[in-house]
Length: 438
View 1: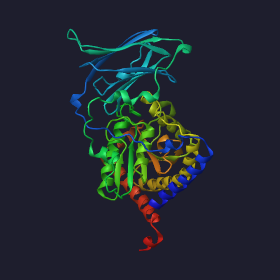
View 2: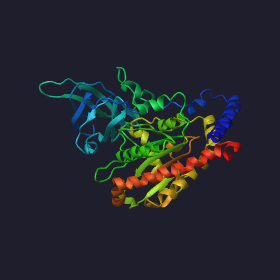
View 3: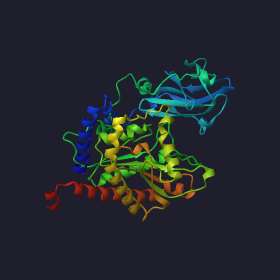
View 4: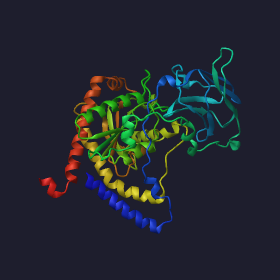
């Protein structure tokens, strides 16, 4: 395995030198550098401000949004286009809003989402009915037995007069706490500071999809994809770790929003031997019903219309956070990525087939269990990757399984076995010929 990965690095390095000499792209290779997002740090929940209620008033010309808090906080608000949105960044808070609060529509506000977007920072994202500007955004002090209130006042503008008030490079900095950060968890340290001497075991990165402000799909009965897949990923981590053969890293271990690009960077920064993204799909009612688990690998062309729909939906996840944080590769980086991915895709497809063989004996599979599409989260050029849709939360039988402890245990067992089978073969094939015979 190490030999295979090193051969990719050698070829890419040689190509980098040659192409860099021919092309004037001074920042080209930086697109492949690994700068990772750390998992969240532990902070006592009781220290966070509490959001308890909200109100919306106004019409299609002027709309006011009010949020009740138990103390005064800072905020930063800005507008975005395509689609039209208003984003309000605030310090991390505890949301105690009634179920379905975000579906409230009135005036310029079509709907809104809210949640944790990074350690120390929460976010509200308002979907607008059309172009608008922020007339005022402020927080009132508590007074006369009334709580502190966040007030957002919007006014409609002509499409030609709309100007976005912020860009993606202004996101995280203003959210970070000014005080010293809380001590890192042991898992955060594992990602940020590899042990010295390095742990020689292969690294398996498990990626629970969505999180924080991004719920993913949601069942009619209220279960969210982000919670279902996180519980599955935590249990899978524990099962894999039991053998002691592999080191396991999660892209998120709690309800935190992680941009798609950062999930890939975590895998690459850890020199991962395998990256597995866990999801649970849903179909709109008009598209009928579907059931069973599906395994996806990366492809420039989707294997069918459903795979294309799902990839397009998942790839928009960063926009849920209000700002698309995906880094577009430069022309040179594109060439290098394409060359490296050819071999990586072969290993990814091999793992997908191994995984299907293990899962089909214990889990109900989709009628077409192996598919491919252009998922951004699978685009690490040197890390074999696959995305598992455990089932459809829109299907009653699948949902019953997804929340079942016994089903989860059986499914985790089959996934863990597939990982072991795949990595065992890669480790043996990567050994020098003389060592392999001993």
